[in-house]
Amino acid sequence: MIRQILLVALGGSLGSVARYLCHRWMLMIFPHAFPIGTFLVNIIGCFLIGLFWGMPFKASEAEYWKLFLMTGLCGGFTTFSAFTLEGIGLIRDQKTGLFLLYVAASVLVGLLATWAGMRLVRI
Image (cartoon, rainbow, N blue to C red):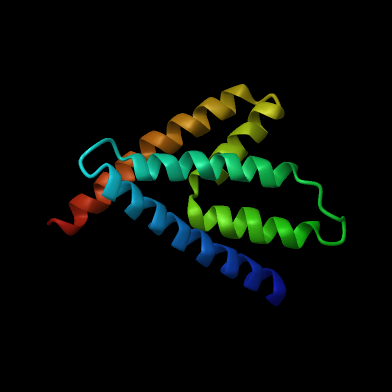
């Protein structure tokens, strides 16, 4: 269990630093535009989690690589990638109604929760 936690922590720290650097770099290039840094991080994270999910690892090492790359690196880079992977899983399981509910609720409730948190600290 300790090994798994360390792999997630290492991947998460690398992903978080990569997210920060990507965001800063995009702000330097596009200072007052569409939030391209966050957008790119989300799209790159989605691509990476899909790539890592499909990579052939040796069976004995697959769990560790997926914890490091998917849960850690992609999770630290962006949680949007995990959201999309779970959404694809619902589609794959032919749970279209649940998929639509999950996507709509995640976006709407997420926006409302962010707004509520911002309002709470502005009291």
